[in-house]
Image (cartoon, rainbow, N blue to C red):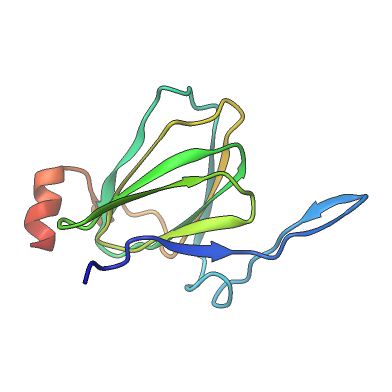
Amino acid sequence: MTPKLINKIELPLIGNENGDLSFCESGKSIPFEIKRVFYISNVRKDDKRGFHAHHKTKQVLFCIQGSALIKFDDGKNKDEILLDKQNIGVLIDSKVWHSMENFSEDLIMLVLASEYYDESDYIRNYQDFLDFVN
């Protein structure tokens, strides 16, 4: 059986004539305590980002505007998902190599992280990642 690399998170999307509202809660819809929040924007369509894994950090990505293709690799299995709905996110577990590409011009990607920024938590070399997970 292939491990499931894609864990979708669906937030409520409440819409009416006044617009849409979505929300998330740490430890409820987001399966960890949120310690860091950042967003990615103004990315050119042909750019690629990510290309790293984390020893400890887990992240949830939402394209709150636009879309992007997210690729996952656990060292044995690979998968990908197009994020293109503002209330559908994806969990990136620790020890999963990930990259992002095919950005729409209007992209705003919100990232919720389980840990504070720590450069030593990053695995930025793919061979080092493979050695670590295998």
